[in-house]
Image 1: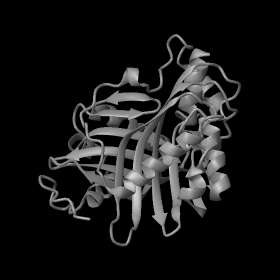
Image 2: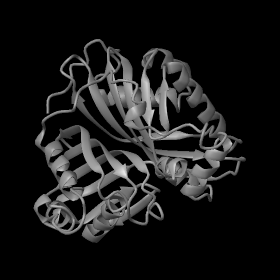
Image 3: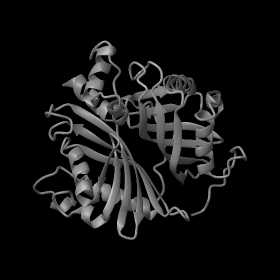
Image 4: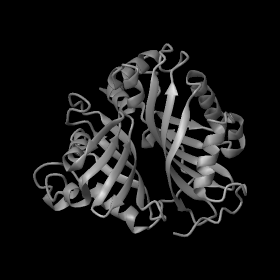
Length: 339
């Protein structure tokens, strides 16, 4: 695939990958937090499942607080899957494996010395050497589980600490969207389309009788036809699955909780860079009522919005590696706030 011209970017960054990996290293391992004043736009909206923050000063404050609680934190970039926006910029989907030791009191309680291992995916829109719009999911469920706290209990404790349901901060939903700055939807590469079609078919609902025509889990087996039989999945809660049965277990455990929810793909990228193979990145949502399943306990009928980011790699026998992130604690918080 053609490389990005990187017009109006600092010449030390020759590709989008250089830029994203480079500034991430400068900010975190290099402790160049103040560089966020020029790498992040003054009024950037940053969405995560926990909510929305506006402006680079809010990002700086959050970064400093994280480094205070986890002073040895490292962010290792596993992949950057990007698409040209046609206007001199790009959207990058950056998958990160993070390590950190809990060495100070903070958002995760008293300093425990626990060594955390978890993933993040950040979708960042960049132009003229500046990130100006962002969607970010960290595996919060994995972090709290490594402290010995159940994600449901963590959400309940958050609500209590924030003064109860009437005053607690609400997780992100379309109602809290501050307005898109980046309005692109990705590229038209066939690998992105392939992954989008797979997840749309897997998540076609509702699950159950009559879903055969939609190609859902109870109809045409989209997983067996599209996934490598030895597929490896890295999933929320720092959990893993393997093979067709593992993929079915994971996706059905999510879908069955929200059987009538609408699955929407908001952004879709495909790439086939030399040496990296065929890869895809999706930003998606599942929006509907908590009417079934067991992943989130007894059905409550509460309206829930699941923000999701996922990456996939393809091989000669289909989808062979998949990384999926959503925030179990934010889903539990929505349920507990409105149940």
